[in-house]
Image (tube, rainbow, N blue to C red; front, top):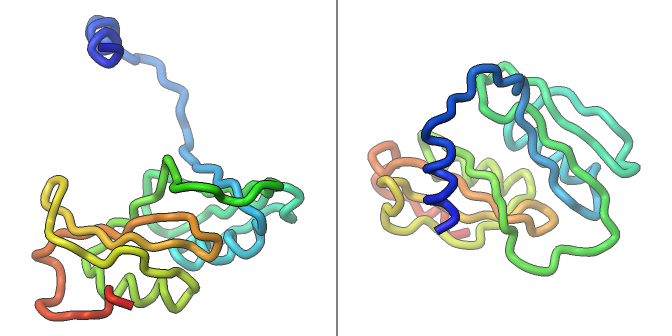
Length: 151
């Protein structure tokens, strides 16, 4: 019910002067240095700023992307359940990307299954601290036979 009320409320309004200039995600972790290094290599960020007390931000890339930085924030508590928000990495070849990410320190949690939402296939992985993320692609871009997602 709340979503429908919000839709009706916003239907008559338009955003004409949005000042949004960047989009980033902050990830709680126990070791910002390790995660910043992993994610910089995983998604191609070239600039790292901060000392992990309590933040490190990675940014800068030749790629055109919707998220222009990730910030890793040191917190005292460890991860206790499934993430409520996770990153999706869209690629042309899932198997090759999963292999590359595993070599960087990721772990495969759920191998690729049948196409689901909007025809995409996803492999669920965990970063070095157990934070879930997905490598996503369309089946027509995948090699016909590969068992690399079953690591």
